[in-house]
Image 1: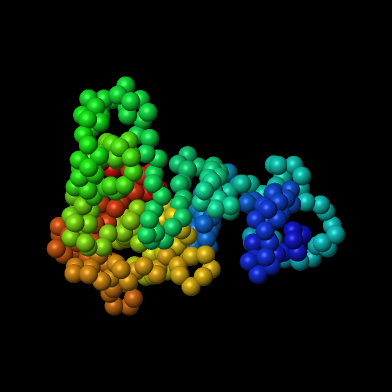
Image 2: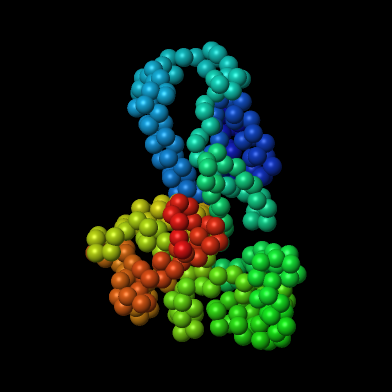
Length: 317
């Protein structure tokens, strides 16, 4: 109520980004902690981790809890709002949450990095883009100039024609646009998993990295055991948000479409990548083994780690 009359963050009040950022910067002075997330599903995940962290501290005596939540609310109700002032000393303010997700209110062109964890998340934004931004193609200035590792291989590639380099990229399932340096940089990257390359050659659907559909498949790969009951939509959406494999928030931007909108692409095909079970539960397909949803999801998980997106903490390859 004290900041913008309680209207911060509400689209219907047409607050500008600068207005909201200015108001948010005042919140710590009023005793509030500030968490940034991509959407409400991401917020749920963060709050769950905060609650888990606080619960652990309470059980281990790190936090001396004086009131239950109900007792706290009862005491608040009997206090006049005019009594007392917001705490100004940092140690008297609410502690900062242990997990803060990268989030950029100004748009995807710039990046704000705010984290208090040892493994900062990289969040991205895009559902299933027709064309995705070209990643940083500077494999290494020293390498591309012949002065670093793999200099012999790079020298051989430099001798090849532009068309020959494009043919090599096409064979690997990589983009074929750009200058010679761009093509060489792509060729110096690890080869994509063969199942991804083969599906692309057969014009079969493969979710892009990053995308919401890729996040859904990686979430199923990480959190579902084949042969057991599938995951419900709500649970799957939260888990997909936590993977960090999607550039957009799984909950969407308030419009008609959200991260679930592309599920129809995963459910169709022969074989499909995802199957719907009784009770609206979802799981990865397992047959045939060489082209099943499980195999594709594993390949997408590998690619997500190569791009530094997946936050599962596992070490692959």
